[in-house]
Length: 165
Image (cartoon, rainbow, N blue to C red; front, side, top):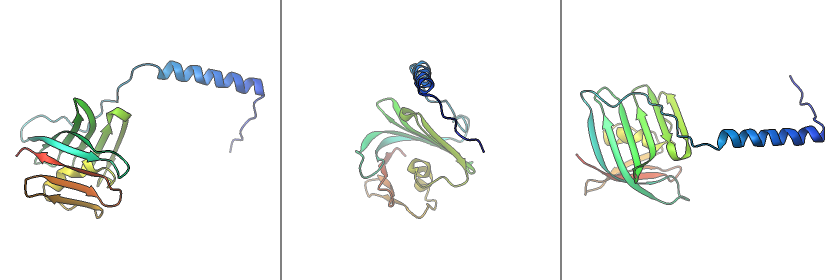
């Protein structure tokens, strides 16, 4: 096990300035979120639906209205994009074995295999719309006017909206 080394005060001060200069040099430019996907949404068999949705990430957050595009393939692949005035807010892709979700404005992304985590509602929306079984804390309801709502009872997060047939 390595032990921390105590630096003299002058060396600490120089080190801090070097770190600040490095952070400014590396972090000062314009950067976009990495372009990572599980698959391309192209080819035969895809069904694409568009609509409007409202998303509230949690009880202390405001609601965010935007457009939703959901693409599904009979082989189990699904892709979702939620945008606000042409700015992608959430991008999600699922297969029968893997999942990926990105939040470009925050430059955050998560990926994994198996069942997607409950904390990312977007990863469960396609399954909910198809009538598939959802994790315990998630609740999906349809309204008489054709709308739907997916909610995480544990966190207060929800997304509700309409999609074209």
